[in-house]
Image (cartoon, rainbow, N blue to C red; front, side, top):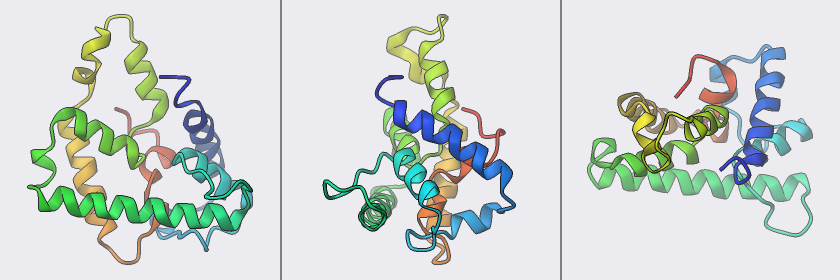
Length: 167
């Protein structure tokens, strides 16, 4: 798992450092859209964190922005489907964890530590996650993503802006 999430782990720690140094509030970050992110380094870090690859061979800023828009649209459609099919409470635990990973609601380092915990049965590592906390985070994310002022910056904002968002 550590190898498959290597890009996300690396970019997550860099985003945490970059956001610690900045004066940005959570609400400011959540309102970022792909075209309001002017720092090329931050754009690339967010793209790596969200596991977004450019839609062309060339990884320039405009192609990354287009890919970010597509990722955000994908997540909005997924939010709609979750609500249409009964809400967050209807998701099984594995679906819940996948949704939270996809939206950047789980800190990747904590995820890897949980999976690699020697006291945890590798087949039942999902039992280590606080299901109620994840459901609350996902419901909050869906609610906040319905606010038209928020955009792609909302994805990953919980795990890259504060240390209190542990698993």
